[in-house]
Image (cartoon, rainbow, N blue to C red; front, side):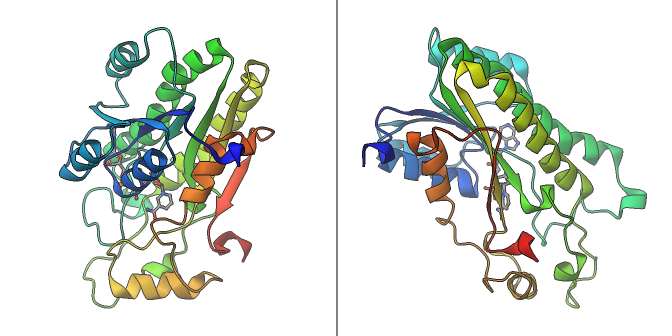
Length: 264
Ligand SMILES: NC(=O)c1ccc[n+]([C@@H]2O[C@H](COP(=O)([O-])OP(=O)(O)OC[C@H]3O[C@@H](n4cnc5c(N)ncnc54)[C@H](O)[C@@H]3O)[C@@H](O)[C@H]2O)c1
């Protein structure tokens, strides 16, 4: 049971105010880890979690700014480093979004492309560079990069068909491309830091139910072998596994948790 214990772990998690970030932060606190939650957005939910758990500290920070990350890292860690880095922050797009990010490929906005890549790739790269390098110096650590099924296969346009919507939803191309890119960023760093005892793995997730329109939920569920979307707490086990010594011989790997989506 010692392997499950996170009381000696300290976790730096980005996107802590988001849907899954809040879930992971609370779960990790409950497992006894010291949690440093980071997000661009400071909301009521993360502040109330901070009140509830003494082992959670929240920091507002833009992960695309090397300067902000460096200042924060110096402030929190000085000569030390967290034992776990979870690169969870990203720009993602629900089937109910209707903005400049949702356009057919032929007319895709270069600005939307760059903004997405900036958070989803540059942000992960910078966190690895600043926090991961500190881990490597101390010769220990686990980095968990959060990818998506859309980083290994294309989105399936059929699940977005919806007669009730005036504008057709198309999952933005930079989301898929950025989620693919971090898969090989992970493998590169896994090999690069193997001798430094820093493990680097991908956690590749399927879609989670989160107030999307009913047609989408039905279409998605019909497409997935389990016949449903993931529940918000169904990735906690993988976070525990990758954060702890349970995964001590695992690096450069893809842990796919998708209800069977990518098996068809
Ligand atoms: N929700 C799903 O169904 C699903 C499926 C597969 C993969 N994922 C991945 O899981 C992760 C979390 O998803 P989620 O549903 O919780 O998303 P979310 O949008 O609820 O949370 C993302 C968080 O990242 C933060 N963020 C964005 N840009 C930032 C920046 N520059 N600096 C700091 N923070 C920034 C946002 O403020 C937000 O709180 C993402 O990487 C996403 O791609 C989610």
